[in-house]
Amino acid sequence: SHTNGVYNENGYRYEGTDPSNYIYMTNKSTNEKELWRIIGVFNDGANGEEVIRVRRHYEKNSYPTMKYDSNSKNHFPNTTMYNTLSSTYNLNNYSHTVNYKMYLGTSDSFKTLTSSGYYTAERGTTPGDTATNSYNNSVSFIGSVGLIYPSDYGYAVLASDCPRTKELYNYDGTAACYNNNWLYQGNSNGQWLISPSASGARNAFAASLHGFVLDYIGVSDALASSPVMSLEAGVMVKGTGTKSDPYEIV
Image (cartoon, rainbow, N blue to C red; front, side, top):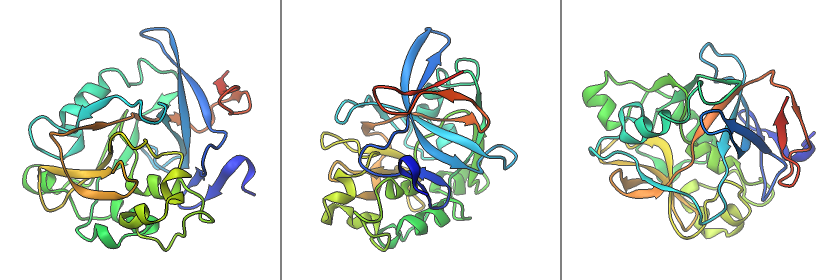
């Protein structure tokens, strides 16, 4: 019914400029209450069960920056970024979080892919370059923390503002595709996406500062990044999900 900005597009997703998807997560190692945002509900649990994927919130143009990998490789679970993020964003530090399945399929045809095309490619059998050469063509792994997918970014804008027939590589041609997209990081820096390039170990996907998605960003570059974790689907919350009244786990 699209209540509160939730749409059913390859998962139940929050879409639009500023949907009511804010949620507090408490880091038990620091006792700090952090503001995160709900991406949606997906069958991405370690055993195919439903989980709620959430992403730590930063204001536009205020994201921390990080290299995807300091060793010029693009298989995410073996990158310096994953090693750094997982030391903080793990099940010990956040209640009601679960390990979840992350998809690392990719495509050389990124310039022609729509949101649904990316969704299919991410869950496909084409591995990233590093996985092809060093990790048995691996296209998925199970862990505690990842990044958003290209398809997440594509679907985070309403179809009424940005047609689903539009390739993500061409999002910069329609300002609403990124300005009305709650996952757009702002125009000061690009943002890392989890997907690796199939054609070169030194490259991975990113949402550019101009609002479109591309795959030839060097993994040794420091881009905006924001961790993604998963909550148990049955978690109970209070609040309305607005920025002034975020959901809070009870």
